[in-house]
Image 1 (cartoon, rainbow, N blue to C red):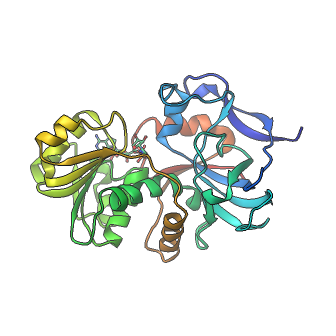
Image 2: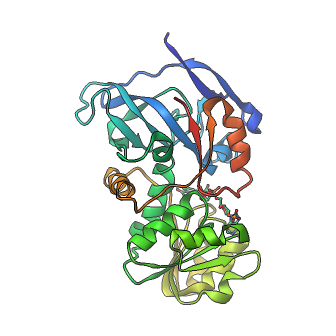
Image 3: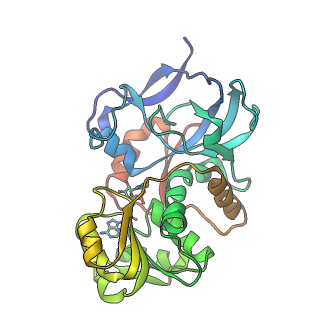
Length: 313
Ligand SMILES: NC(=O)c1ccc[n+]([C@@H]2O[C@H](COP(=O)([O-])OP(=O)(O)OC[C@H]3O[C@@H](n4cnc5c(N)ncnc54)[C@H](OP(=O)(O)O)[C@@H]3O)[C@@H](O)[C@H]2O)c1
């Protein structure tokens, strides 16, 4: 059996369950392609799965390979694949139910990939798909925001937030964002109209009558977010539990939770925006694949600016 290097976990637990080892090299079945992974990125869902926090939602076959972002080169294609040929540079958001991209190779459906942005390297491309698609879908598909409307983005300097701010400004929204003091200047550079330092200012004191809140913190941040919305506005939650219907009704607003999905048209559009220089993924750190445990420890601080990337090639 052909093997490859991968980072897998055999039991749930702290970062030291992540092991760099030999694993079976996948083979693409009909409609799939084999991608030689150049880079993948770390999303908080990775360490939540690894720690066992998501056990109630989905069973993962152990040992399991994490990683829902991929940027790489097509190695081979399965039968019926028409969009790609060996040598094509691609990026995408693989299906989270299957082995992911913390590996030298990943087999993915061709529909889960699009051509990589030409002007970005694999490191920057790998930073985009999961966080970018989630931000895009929250702002435009779910909240349905259009030019001139107002949105509050929580955790605005994080993986999802820093892309959400950039997308919101491209679509001419007015955007407020929360971050600590050290990220206030960074939010301004992203184009954020109203950066809010959560260490010194309660966001609900300065944000009123907004059309939408992109809420990725939960707890107290969620419960204080209702009052910044205008009647009929919408809170889009990115983490569970789903927002309470009772709370949304009592504030005269709407609320929902979303899980970002692969969307080829949207990921292509985001790639073109990156190529035009209007979207810039921020890279907080790059770790070699074998140091995935260190990358998880950094992500678990929950104070990363932008994205952490794992370099494979
Ligand atoms: N539903 C989905 O499909 C989906 C998709 C992606 C992510 N998510 C979830 O959404 C959350 C954010 O994801 P992410 O990738 O953006 O995470 P991330 O990159 O780890 O977020 C880190 C950011 O959070 C900020 N932060 C920490 N505490 C904060 C607070 N009290 N108020 C405001 N900002 C604060 C930090 O800013 P400072 O350092 O300045 O504090 C940091 O920049 C995670 O829970 C993740 O699991 C859900």
